[in-house]
Length: 275
Image 1 (cartoon, one colour):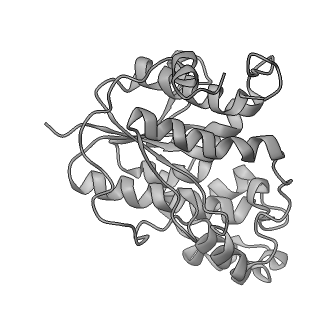
Image 2 (cartoon, one colour; image 1 turned 30 degrees about the vertical axis):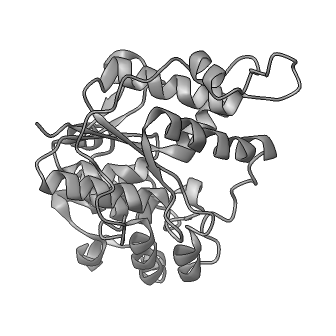
Image 3 (cartoon, rainbow, N blue to C red; image 1 turned 180 degrees about the vertical axis):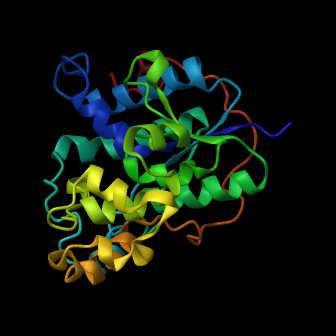
C-alpha cells in the first residue's frame, strides 16, 4: 500500500533547531557546536513518532540561488532578511549526511526555492491519491490547502493545534486557501519584503476578496483612488507569492515506501562520530 507523505521544509526545521534549544549542544570536548544537526534530527524523529509513523518522509532544502527568479521580478524580494549565522549554515552538510545515514531522502534543487519543490511534490502525490502533510510554519503553503487531504504540521504548538487545513485558513483570515496569494499581495508579507497596498490590512483584504474574488476582478467602485495606482504591482506580487506546482524535478524522487523508524539524535550523532 502506498504510504502517506510527510514533506519537510528543511531550512525551516534547521532554523528552528538552531534557535529552539535553551542551551547549546556541543561535542563532548565542548569545542564544536552540534545544536543544528542534533536539533534537526531530534525534531524530525519527534514528528515521525508523534504524527508520521508509516509515512514516507522527504526533506527539501532551498537552493542558494533559489530566490533568483522571483528577485528578477522585484529586486527587493527577501532583501530584508538577515544573513544566516555561519554555524547554522555549517550545520547543513551535517544534516544532509545524517539524513543519508537514516535513509531519509532529500533534495536541494539548483535554482529552486524549497516551497516550489514541495508544492510540486505535494501536487503530484495528490494526483496519485496520497495524503500529504507539510512540516513548516511558512504561510505561503496555505495556498495548497484548498485540497482537503493536504495539511500543514507544526510540532512546536500544542498537540491540538499542530495541524492547519483549508478550513482553518478561512476561519482565521476570512479567505479561501486558494486565495492566499491574492490576500498576501493586497495586505503584504514582511517575511518576503512584499509591502502590499498602502492602507489595506487583513480585514480590508478579506472584504475585497469576498465570494472567492481574485485581485483582477474586484469591482473598481470598491477601490480607493490611491489603491488603483498600485494595482499592477499587486498583480506582480501575487505571481511572486504563487507557488510553482510544475517545477522540473528528477524522476522517481519519491519511493511511496514508509520511512524506517528514525534513531534518537544522540544515537545518530554517535554513529556519525560527531560527539
